[in-house]
Image (cartoon, chains in turn cyan, yellow):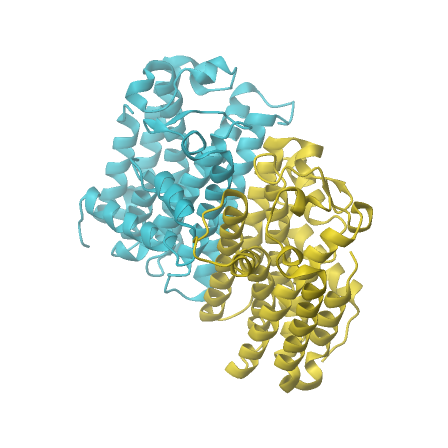
Length: 291
Length: 291
């Protein structure tokens, strides 16, 4: 097991993204917009999860870089399109103008499309048997379709009317954020050597817990922090009448739910022993983050 | 070699698209929009090319259906996004309202994103060795990135200034239309049994010739046919000052170029013998189409 610090993992992932998006024949203005969206400031939570899940499943880490770059590009694509005027109409993202404010709406639509396409192109760098590649392809397409479904429910409605408010907010969050967090970890585990179904199952349970936890923390930051601290417009969920955790459970109830999900994530990976140290550390950091 | 008529091939491809897009948990309004865009009237040129290229390379045909469905979904995605108000702002497509006119701009953006994602999900149905899957994945991502690059040049400019008008129109068309036509044939050939590099090379040369030919015929229809016959707004290229073949070479010069490209396509596949009959027939039909 090779231990690497976060910044050297991020460097490897960013280098892969840079390599994949810089195709000969691509208009320089398109590459520039793609790089702005995918290689700007950001926590790179998803590729870090892929790396640590790969190590937890017995891998070394670097073999997860093609999937880590892919999930980060899918994440960047979804931010660019969700920020568009026809959807969330946001002006600020990671402390900078959103891509459509910077480069125009046409370019933002096309750069988002290119990011989504190039995410799949990163998978072509995997050296794995076909059955593994197909499982990874299925994870990524299921998560991306889930994110899009979550955005449809969130922006356009259409949720089954018999659901309670908490069931609705869980369903939206599971799709919008949880699906890709889960896929980041699962794809990372699948990019390593063949491991036991028990290991994969532990990583699935861990990732489902922290996926929901991550979004509850996001909702809490939206109500408790000023925009400057978070780098995007806050307070907008309440303004738009969107369903959120603090809206359904209150701030204290939401904090209690974060603690409960953190425990659940810790318990899930406990049987994996020391090689899951990276995942454990990430779960704790994500529970306590303030931006 | 099993000979099938066009309509039974289209039925198999449409059934695959229908299966791939109907995922449990997907909002019904999203599935409805995806089906409107991908399963409406249309010639299904690209999956038919995949099928006939598969047969020309020694396959039976049905094994090309996952890639045929994928290229048709990528094609449908590109039409939905290109029609958006921020891009070509079109109201009519295949004789019906464009998706954003029917279901709103937010839904059109998200349904396009879902179609692009689900195209890759169709590839997960291939039963091929990993090296073949990776080649197919690379063909599809290269063609899709090429289409997006072509749309950037066409809508936002940025072509190198030293190019002649004919070089510019060839570059735009090769990206916007040619890249996916080429990929449709190449992916079809790759979905069959391992064949000689000479066969694949013949199919590449065929597909590059008919890709350009297809777009010249499109440009000619835009200047010579009324909207009702073509099912989309015609005459708009001249109106928007876009570079077209008839604009650069004149109507007669463009027709001569069509004949020349048809001959080049026929010659390319001549060495493949009777199993390339489907490709030969397609090339001739596409050269003579009037809508």
